[in-house]
Structures are given as C-alpha cells and as structure tokens.
Length: 108
Image (tube, rainbow, N blue to C red):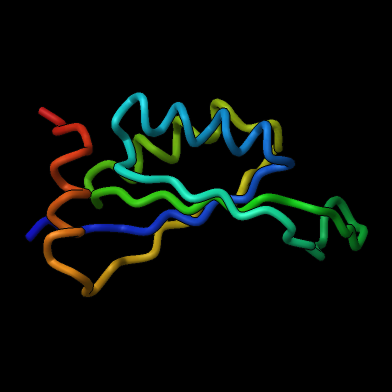
C-alpha cells in the first residue's frame, strides 16, 4: 500500500481555493480536493492579531508528491506564507487509499 497523505491548506476565498484545487487535480498532484467554506481564522501576522474568513482545502495525495504539491500551492497562492501541511493517513478504506495512488502522478 502506498504511503498516503492528507494536505491541509487554507485559502483567501473560494475562487483561490478552486484555482489551487483545480491545478492540483489537473496536474495529478492530488487525487481529490475538498473545499470547505466558512472558516474564521485568528492568527498573529507581522506583530498584530488578525482575523479573517478563509476556505479550507483538503487534498489527498501520496507522500512522495508532498514536496511538489507544496511547491505548486505556494506558487499559486496569494499569501506570503500560505498554510500547507501534510498529515499522514495511517489507515482507512483500502480501495479508497489505492484509488489515491492510482489517480496521482508517478514520479520517475
């Protein structure tokens, strides 16, 4: 079984989240992307506490694609320091996990 990952990304809005998600799918860096609207974020940025609305982007991919996926998100993202984190998937429905491996690009 291929080592799979869930990638947590935040985006400024639905348009940006869609653009990033569509690129990850088209380029086969992720097998599936979920967009979750309505998140409120509180965070420190440049010495101040900020609050904003964001969209959560959840991407399912293989561990060997995390670095390439991260670089692609950073290239497409409007933030200076976008949130892109990888969480190992340590179990799940085997056919779904196999599907993630099948639908993502093989790195030579």
